[in-house]
Length: 144
Image (cartoon, rainbow, N blue to C red):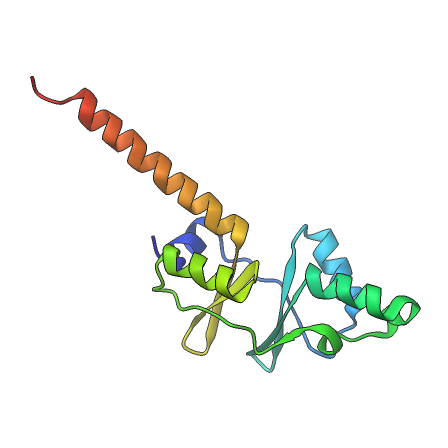
């Protein structure tokens, strides 16, 4: 299974924020939409990722100054990404090796989506279930 196929199943909704956006507003967007990350875009270009990990670290580090922070103060700058033709096994390896839960998918200079570790696990589970059903059907209909 390819990353573009997982994105097709997941859907193409993208949540973004500008680097100069307030971190407080970013948290609100994440909570209201039940998402764990935001893509940070500047003039149509991917410049960072903001996940709940960075938000929690900023809350711990800045305490009462948290409300004054901007996204660019805490975001992951120049995040790793994969292309649309990457196999799911390679995607999982990239996510594990870079210790990220959210991986942007870029087609050239165009952001096509973000895959979470949950999206990947769900896709793998569905693919294995399909293969399992096909094998059981094949065995059941085996000529005697």
